[in-house]
Length: 116
Length: 115
Image (cartoon, rainbow over all chains, first blue to last red; front, side):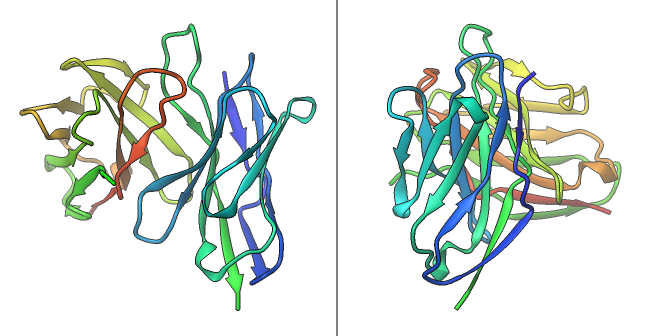
């Protein structure tokens, strides 16, 4: 079964500082990986996704993520955090090609706080 | 940009009561989903729906739950007899195509509180 681990429950960074949110996955094949963001009172917004090809993917709002197969990781990064980035971030894996399943498996999320 | 809309944003109900959570998916999307997030826990898949029938459901989606697309725009989740443990944020999502690179678009969620 596929699973996603986000080791950090809560991270606090200063505005302007760099950010890295960790995500590790367990998956039996080439994964499809996603990062979603949830701002307070809002739904889940897709930041970026990886399916194949270049292992460094660019997303919206200046975010990027790097797929590292050897480490089973898909960490999210941003070089300079803005106060508006304060939100909860979810890593997800799926769906499963060929298995007839189209569900995503989410991690527990990492809450990001930004200090002015 | 088109959005998935969910109503109400917050629903409070008593244990044993029926609730219906409503969603309006993006108009040209064909695949619909419900996920839920119990406070402090993971976002969990409940059910997927296509062509007026359930295409996949999780273990969570037992006989207390049902989904329906009563007209051309709404997609509803009904919980027949709510339990305290049904308290969660419920997210509706839709997808245009059932291709693996077709992203899910989520609504803002309905927070269900069962007392």
